[in-house]
Length: 65
Image 1 (cartoon, helix red, strand yellow):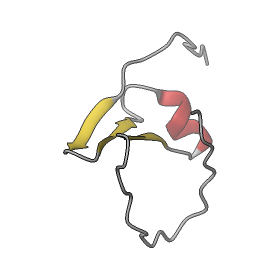
Image 2 (spheres, rainbow, N blue to C red):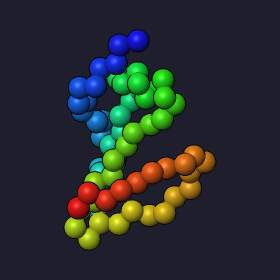
Image 3 (cartoon, rainbow, N blue to C red):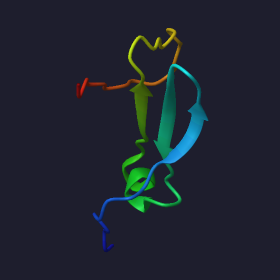
Image 4 (cartoon, rainbow, N blue to C red):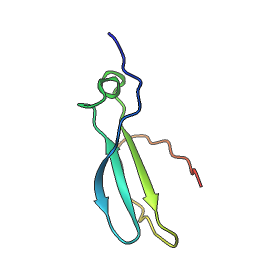
């Protein structure tokens, strides 16, 4: 299987005054489906707030700035 590792644009799922939520689709990136993982990013504006939420899967997160 040939894997395309070129950067792909994320799709905006939600956007508001406090920030935006973006995802990468496994249909656009078959390697995500192959590895059974997903990809997303949360962009918070200054003084933005992300409310806690429940997920039935493990997540890894890190802060860029």
